[in-house]
Image 1 (spheres, helix red, strand yellow):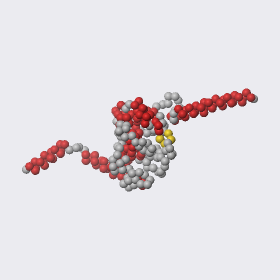
Image 2 (cartoon, one colour):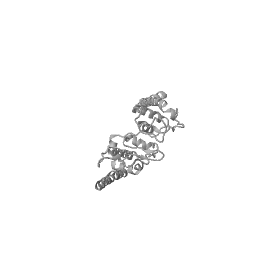
Image 3 (cartoon, one colour):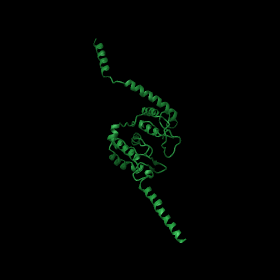
Image 4 (cartoon, one colour):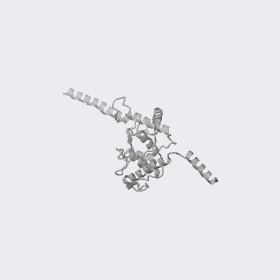
Length: 247
């Protein structure tokens, strides 16, 4: 009788306090992992290995997390047709659903930084001015003040940020792709990361108040153009006037 009462009480307590939807969520996750594994074996395993262990041509993907997968694949940098100094941004070949499935499979290999989620309230509350200060202190040295990008050494470059989405910007900070340093939550917390992303989108979308932006490369090329076109044009006019006077 004591055993029957204990079993009955355990069943009642489990029914009352057991977490809801766990089995359904696990089943959905497992399905995404299986679909992602099929996509991985078809499009990624030739370089990264059958188990994501890496090889001579590509690094290990164990522990990189879903953020790295979403960044690399959603920006079209992966799959890579041929190795080079740096993978270029291009149109992705996978849909967002397929990218999420790939990310779920890679995440199952060892975890890592998760794909960030930015809600509307968090985006609205982000401090644009503070994001600009953080960007100029940590990012402008390579990506240039307006996010137009700039060359680095050995054929590499800091890419143009005008096409990057807020999620991709934060993913790059969290995963450190290519030559970019990694900015963890201990260096740049989530609120500051969203503020930086908001500033980058602002400078990328803001109209050029002074006329043509000239690629937003800054005062050096603008000054060079002024010398070449402005001063050069004046010299040409002076030479033309002098030539007519001699005649």
